[in-house]
Image (cartoon, rainbow over all chains, first blue to last red; front, side, top):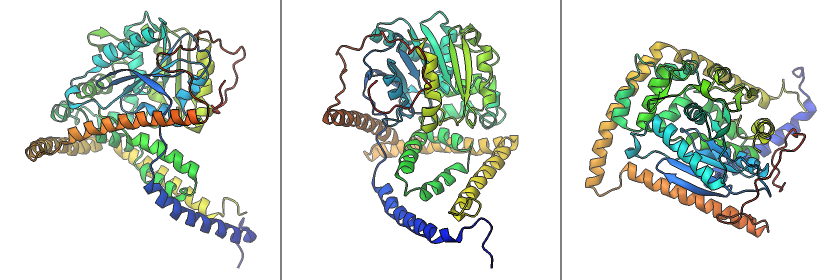
Length: 360
Length: 133
């Protein structure tokens, strides 16, 4: 009998040996996996400048001998924790910025408590973000602040910048930020106004539970959770793979609930009426038209983003009123754009080269 | 070594990858239909209502039994998470101090001057390596 084409018979014993060794390692490491916790995340030294209900404002301690004049405020997405941007030393976006000489602050979110179910879009855009900007100004002694918004943090930053076009925001960087919500096709279908009774949901549960948010994210790629576990088992002998898996898995499943009224506004104003895209958005009675944004803006989008597809994000740069504006499409997905090996190689240096000259 | 085309492990991984893509694509196509939305929201609406009623009932029951409710447990978990975060910070600080690399900037201490200028020729950028600039 002939060997299949391409099969090197001499390599078979070596291959079997390697597979047996991996099988043994899998058993040992498998036990280790369940008996140990993952790496400590979000450990770049920081001070909490303010903590008010769901809002947390951190200031990260400098790691450079001198810093750029303009501080940077990162606005995290309201569905997830900010430590995705501060994984472990060497893989932390925050650490990268600090070492490159930026003075970094982060607006991160805690789970809203049941009594915070009445927090609406106006609380986030007209209270939490401006309050953090004021605190950054006071703490840094600088009037101007650059803002980086990730995903829905980008939407909040856009709304803030539209309502306060005269400052103090100096630069705006959005990571994978949707503005055309019709193009979030699956979310749009899940929230079809003919069948989805958002009033009934919010009135009955108050804050939207994290399990529901997580399920809707997982439904975008329903097979991926199972296959990722198969891949974990295959690679469990590989410490680096396991470390990385644990970091991302912990973050992805650490979803936050959403305040009820805020969720109602997202559903009605953005999902149903697409007001941000249609230039009819208002927050707390104030017009929020992104054409009013005039500051330099960089929008980074991911080529394989299954959560915010390019179609949902692509009109942002065309619609803002800035003259200094740039969109950059990078390889990667919604999360790998900002964290992990892909981000280290692509987004972080791009952001640094764009922001450095605009931070003096 | 065997090439990828004949390596059973590589073939297995490729098959898993293809299955994942195929299933995701099929499911996504199904989930964009209005019928799916209708069915999902009917089930979800009923479940949310039942969940709310059951939650209220359990809240009263647990109160009667002098046991903490889910909301109280979540509150405790949040506090534990905060404590864990602070312990992690202390751990990192101790490690840095042990390595003779104690952070020079602490809250309230003088901060670095805001005088940094961008490098004249922006580098292509390299990942953080842990060393000070």
